[in-house]
Image 1 (spheres, rainbow, N blue to C red):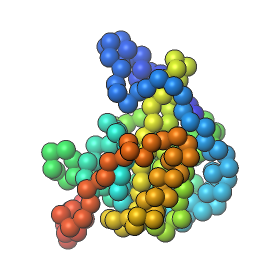
Image 2 (cartoon, rainbow, N blue to C red):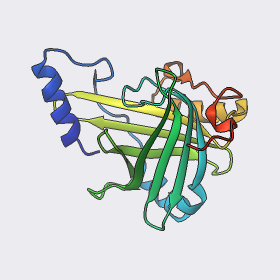
Image 3 (cartoon, one colour):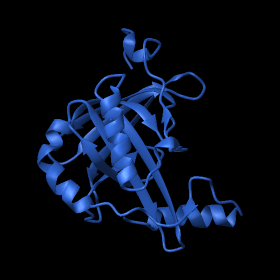
Image 4 (cartoon, rainbow, N blue to C red):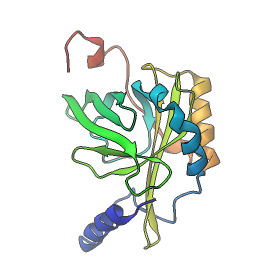
Length: 197
């Protein structure tokens, strides 16, 4: 996976004499991205629509803390992404971005949101109708990597069998499911009101 952006980030934090806790020694796990991408590419239109975040690993770049709702519109090449929810202060927030083929030709999608850096977007598993397990890992030549993982659902809740399927997909590449925390969803979320975002 492309490493130049993470390298720049690491240089900055090392210069500040502190490595953030999400940057750890080691390397990204082995994932058969090419096989996954070839299987999924013809189905990208099916991946479009609404996805609710039901769980994620520690991610300082996720500014939406609760009620995360992602709207993906596919134009045949890339997804336009609009994410809404509630920030750490309890205020409604919207973030816009895109999910597109990796610009360096690597066999996976990349996610590019405003006020963030472009990152890998690997769909480890999905049935397109109920759940999606998303993984992003960036390594560098200094022997460190950072990774982020998400579990998405087509509704604000996800049945245990689909949640376990994502846990299994993550365990298969060495990601400990205990790293996940549940994302607050439900009746108190703004998407349940008639107020537009």
